[in-house]
Length: 124
Image (cartoon, rainbow, N blue to C red; front, side):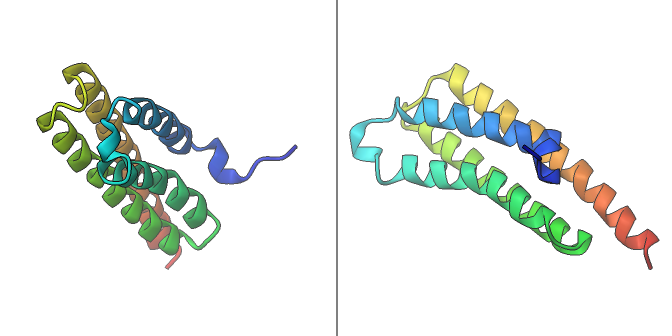
């Protein structure tokens, strides 16, 4: 079975790990948050991976735009973590683990974006 090029990207693999983490901590949220914060966090976390996959099949310029959207989704997850810790839905440990994932993902996406921008500039 073959792979699509984005599946080999470390940032994509890391984003899948992040989704696994998010699904685990969402189970700790109170039931009344099932359709609110947990749903928003689930959608934002999956958006990171989805945009990497969708953007990879396009031009480098378009892919870079999708990476920007993925970074925005990662920041959205951070806001969800901030709300969750303030509401005491998650532990300090889960908060800092989630924050570490987000910081690492954003750094990796920034690196990919820089690479894509150089590629775009060199093709002019």
